[in-house]
Amino acid sequence: MIDTRIIGIISGKGGVGKTTLTFNLGTALTDLGKSVIVIDGNLTTPNLGIHAGIPLYPTSLHDVLKGKVDIYEVMHVLPSGLKIIPASINLNDLKGVNPELLSTHLIELIGKLDFVLIDGAPGLGKEALSVLKASNEVIGITTPELPALTDLLKSVRLVEERKKEYTGSVINMLRNKKYEPRKDQIETFLEGIKIIGTIPHDEQVKYALSKRMPVVHHKPNSKASIKIKSIAANLIGEEFKIPWYKKIFKI
Ligand SMILES: Nc1ncnc2c1ncn2[C@@H]1O[C@H](COP(=O)(O)OP(=O)(O)O)[C@@H](O)[C@H]1O
Ligand SMILES: [Mg+2]
Image 1 (tube, rainbow, N blue to C red):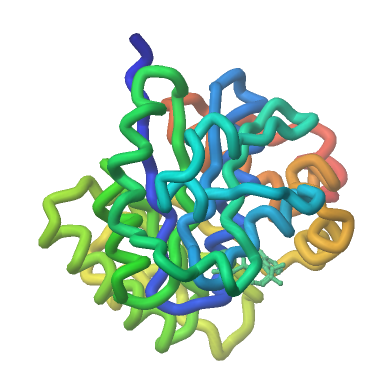
Image 2 (tube, rainbow, N blue to C red):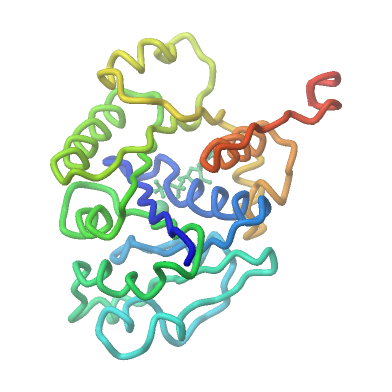
C-alpha cells in the first residue's frame, strides 16, 4: 500500500499564491513520476478548476460533501496525468455543504496515491480549519509583506495546536526590491519557522493562467518554474539540478 502524503496548502491571507502553488507543485510532482491529486478545499471561492482549465462540470466536491456522489465520480485527469477534484463555482451549490466532512471523504484516497494536495481557503474560519483537519502535513505560503506574514504566523500556530506536521513556508512573488524584507528578516519574523522555498514574481505565471496551464509546463525554464520544480524535488528528497544552459545563459 502506498504511503499517501496529504498536504494542505494554506496561507492566512488571500491572493498570495495558494492555488498557483497547489496546481504547479501537483504538476511538478506528477512529472517526477508521482501519482498526485489536487483538491479544491476553497469551497466558497474555488478557482483550482479555473487554473486547470476544466470545462464546465456537472458535479463537484460540493456534491461529494453532500453525500450525493462518490469522490471518484468528480475526479478529472488532466493531460499531464495530474488528477483534480474541483469545487463548484455555482453559489447555489454552497447550501447544505459541511466542509468538515472533507477529511472523511479523503480517507478513500489513502493508499492509492502518493500525494493529495489540498488548495486551502484563506483566513482562519471553518473552511480553512477543515483543510487542516483533512491534512497530515501543511505547507504555508505568503508574500514578503507584513500583513501576509502576520496572517501566516497565525495559521501556523493553528497547525501546531492541531499537532499537524508543518513542512515549511514558501515565500512567493519576491520582487527583489529595497522595500522588501530580506530572507533572514522574514525568517526572524516567522520565528524560525522553516522556509522550504522562495518563488520570484514572474509574469510567466500570469501568462500561464491566461492559457489555463501550469507555469511549469507553459514555460518550464522560467524563474518561477525552476523554483517550484526545486520545491517539488526537495519534497521527495531529490536534488533539483538547474539545467546547464540556464546557468550559462541566465535565462
Ligand atoms: N510567483 C508569481 N508571480 C506572479 N504572479 C503570481 C505568482 N504567484 C501567483 N501569482 C498571481 O497572483 C494571483 C493570486 O494567486 P492565487 O494562486 O490565485 O492566490 P490564492 O490562491 O492564495 O488566492 C493570481 O493572479 C496569480 O496568477
Ligand atoms: Mg486560491
